[in-house]
Image (cartoon, rainbow, N blue to C red):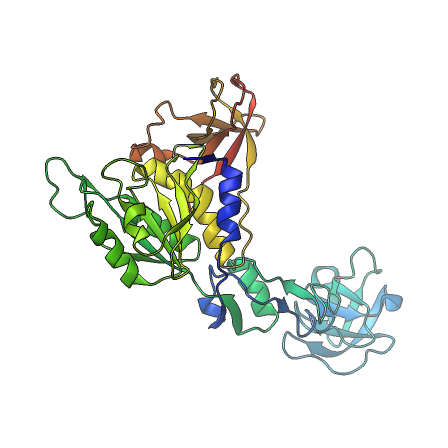
Length: 397
């Protein structure tokens, strides 16, 4: 089997990503979804010049002086007259600034006496938020492809949008295989382990905006693997286990019954060399992940996440940051190595990465403590403690 470099394998997968159609959802249901159409401002924000403080709307030319109070402007209830020379209007934060006024004297700096108010000379800030100071009508506020978080939803709401067009959630079928796994809560035999991979992948898929469809785990039998996949539908199939070439690795032969054609046979990555990718006769893409939990989780970060994001029209880039290695690292071999690591901060504020001593691909406890994956490129030279390394930060939210 040809071992593809990580970037080449990912590029092949992304080239085959099928974009999801858009659907209309209520603003309150859009959290975590990806915009399929841009949000454009229908009017300016604020739609009028507004006061940034409680105080008095005046003409700067009248300051300092004692002015006649002619009205009041509150948020949602503007004073609609035009301010003349020698006049002032009581104003509150967020209220419309009256025509003719060009200054706000904050209330702490003014002294009221009945129908008059004495104000100091105009100096410093005018405390007026100009019309369109946040955004003007016609401004593109959010482009298609962005993930909607609470801050972006606030922006959409401020533009008056009650509904948004977002990418449909990809339905991702997850199938775990192997005679050695039993579902959590079940009764494992003496030589079986609990299936942790499906739980992890389903949670990751939800966090990436997809809708996981977890199938019951199946044993090492071609029909038992092919039949539920054929019946499940979905937009993408992810298998766990059976990805290698041993006598009990039957996933690829089983899916061959469904017309599987391969685009990626194996990848020069550690852990996760047996990871593969292909297409079924019905057009569904299939990502085959190794059964070992760490291998599956690393390759989910490297390949499944970009694939699912691309299907939603989002940026699939894997973002790498720099950190200092807390430990010396040996020279790397012919496979790109992604090591689970713990992050901390040095006194000078630099991010420090401490790789776990044991990187065995079966260890779930290590992944539960890891904050990041430390990348060792193919053929990388040895690294001394304190030297820079590349990191992929894991979301722990």
